[in-house]
Image (cartoon, rainbow, N blue to C red; front, top):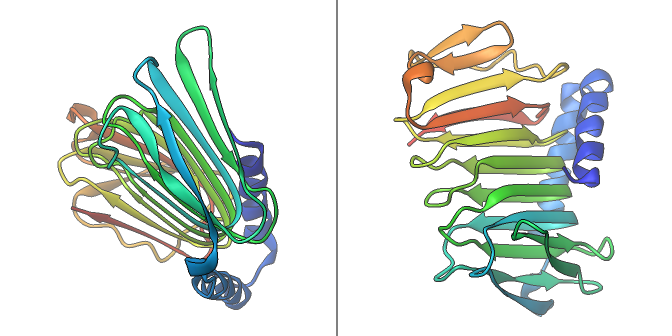
Length: 244
């Protein structure tokens, strides 16, 4: 997992202990408003294009200080494609292949000015996505992509993850002082486990769910062919889960 992601998760735990709800709301709103006001129309653009046809899978790592991250499965071929719009220095990108033919593709901020990162992934097995942002928005759409492992963390802002209805995923997600919106397939088995310190007293569950010792799951979770297994950290700005 990204070092930055671990820091964000730790920050979320501390925020859970020391921040009042009104202060948390202010942090979230300020972060979102700040990012929305970023003008990327005048930003420099880095075009991303990395062929993966010779790889057996890919691990995608994104570490952004502030801005926006969008990830989906709209690549027209077996490749990573997309763009990064950056207001400051050019972010670093790295591509490596291990001895098993697994590709590692990493994107990292070079400063605090802000980036808008758009990534299109192939339909082939991705393997894992690690996405971390200090302040801003993350929107990850896994529909049509095979991503067995997903790690997402934000310090402040908003996180939205839409899960695949075709492939199972194990996810670790936290939004720190931000808000979290999970969109899950109605036909999949869904299980959410709360990490220590995560607390969502106003969470309302539908009749599809039953509560467990440290979370909740759908009644058909064990028998489901597709399973969405989520370990959830803190999201002090609010948490919602809906089905499509």
